[in-house]
Image (cartoon, rainbow, N blue to C red; front, side, top):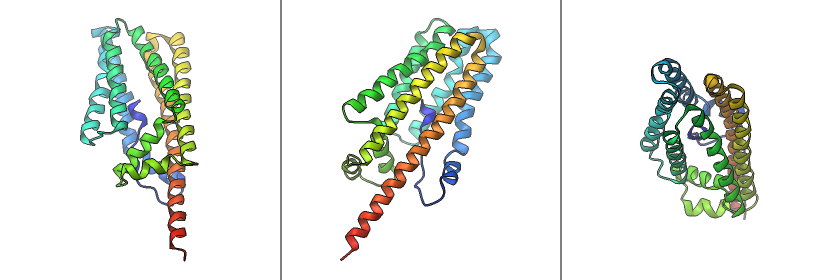
Length: 234
């Protein structure tokens, strides 16, 4: 889950393709190495020595260390950072408490079920989580939270955050069905294929998510520009 959140730059008027290229660059490559390449290397080299369960458990360690390092290095002491840290801790506890590698494969299914419920709950109580992600993003770029919070609760921005949170729910829901299918098809013996396929799907949906973020930020910037022009008019 942590790999789906990017440190977005301030947007200008460049085409979306250029902005996506700017965002999905070295950080994305590093995420793929840590969350996909290193775990697969550990699994394939340590499986014979440690067995399925401990090799799979060990393969999760680099991602945990990387997430913690990023959290403290970038000082993500915000709702966004704490959310990522909480999901990592819960996932780690589930993995440690698992007794078999097969059970570990199902942990992400259970995690995603919980996330789908969480996304939907935030929308029901009219506090879509995507809005808080945006508030944290704006704060990192110098916008006080007491300024961005009332703005983001206005229409049409609030509707955009509902839609973006709904996308996160659909994203995790699709991941649930994909993982269930792959587990039944490959089981532990196909860990390599499951890891690669789910990571590819995660990357694709992340690009879609980032594209949605870009659209919303562009609309917010346009709103600010129009408001400024209206104030300057005599």
